[in-house]
Length: 226
Length: 399
Ligand SMILES: Nc1ncnc2c1ncn2[C@@H]1O[C@H](COP(=O)(O)OP(=O)(O)OP(=O)(O)O)[C@@H](O)[C@H]1O
Ligand SMILES: [Mg+2]
Image (tube, rainbow over all chains, first blue to last red; front, side):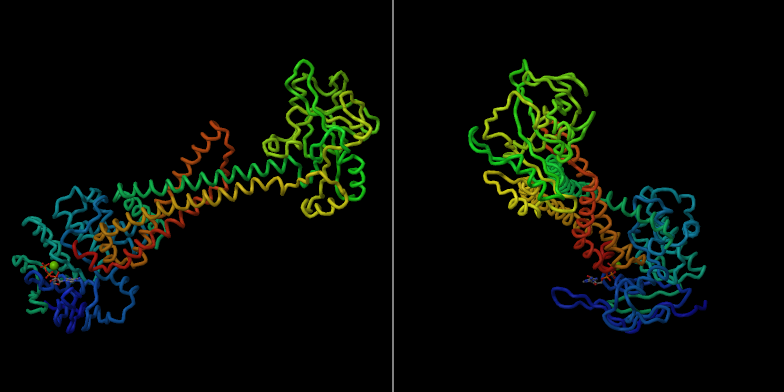
């Protein structure tokens, strides 16, 4: 399988956090290049820095040192506003615990993707419904999300993440709270989206999911190994 | 962004925001509403005082200076005379001057009520701003001929059961009613020290030249006046003319009453209320605002995930701050409305039950609304800034 242009690049990326006992080095020189169409899966022991890595990939945090590039653009010099613009459209994030708005319906949750983007009403609605259709939940569009099953909730969250057709989909243990059947349904969604061309970076503890990936990396003590 | 879509997002966000923590929002609402009740009550008291001040000035007559003789013994030489008033009128041609002598006359068969008889000329009624309800005012001829004509207050005419043209008798002298007037409100009556200015409900105007049986005139007191009124032309302040008039009249043993003097008492009250009531209302509002602020800080901590989600979806720190500020303004705005409503009810009850002259004017209610916005913005500043400064990764850490 061949892949396209580089979406995300990390070169000697380090990340440390202040702590009472001095700075803790969490990422210690990560080199990574993710190309368009890849499905990269990261596993590794707890506390090894996977979530820290994903936060950087989702442009939710900055590296302490090293080069982080998105679509070839160096992020270090980017203003807050441009960073927000990238988050609005270019990146989709899926969380372990879904992060849905419980009082809203599935459709409204997907529409929330447009909260800071805007767009014409009919158009956003169409895009949201299409996204729900992609994850197989078009029939549940008007259900409040709090009555959905965990698997369905995570699929709503995936629909929200992809409703604007992002460049990169980042997911941190998206099946961590799901049973086997739901896990399979959610992973099928990821695979379908990946086959359609979406680039995916996914962290999991579940070795059984590795068959979905096109590349597998292991995070150990703040470094990434094949 | 499409305005309708944006509006819908905002309404939804605000609605959910204030419902997310109903207990806290309710508590903030209550605290702020109490502050606004206090503020609105203060405004009602101030409005009432302002209305009272206007009443007082209206009762005196617009732009009027009153010169009132201080009480003195029957046989003392008069301190004020009609001649002085006439001379003053000649010296101040731009002003309207009128003098009056005042008698209290008992109604036949009713020993307790007395009628205020004001012996004067045709200029008093327009000068004091009393309205003619029917018939006519006294005129020059009435005064020159000493006609037995009177203008009666409407209350008195009602009591007599007589209208214009009717004949009535005062101490066995009969008079013809030529006009019916409504004398100024009871405003001056309540003001201490100015009781000699008031006409009372039951009053008549008679020409000073009319033969009157009840007068206690001695040769010395003939032509004496109890009060002289000077009306300054529009555009000039009575206070400015005061020194000139004082010089010209050269009268001792009189008090000079101007709108300014009348308002002095009310002004003192206004000042006291503004200071005392104002600080109480301000304290209540600050207390409410502080409650709102502390509960909002707790809210921000509880809504970390939501903040993180918004940031992950591209919200700028300013977007996040705006959300919390808008929620705070919504709470303070609604609290202001509730506070005003409660205060309006209280004002109504107090006015009806206790006759306290509280009043709420529509325009005054703009203040609480403006204060609500200021309060919302001011006291949400810190929580909103707190929310805006949380980094997205940190907000999502315990997701
Ligand atoms: N903001 C922070 N401040 C201080 N320490 C942090 C911060 N974020 C992460 N860490 C530390 O960095 C280390 C790696 O955390 P991270 O969440 O990336 O691990 P992880 O690989 O995702 O683990 P898990 O599999 O349990 O989710 C941990 O020891 C954590 O305590
Ligand atoms: Mg993690």
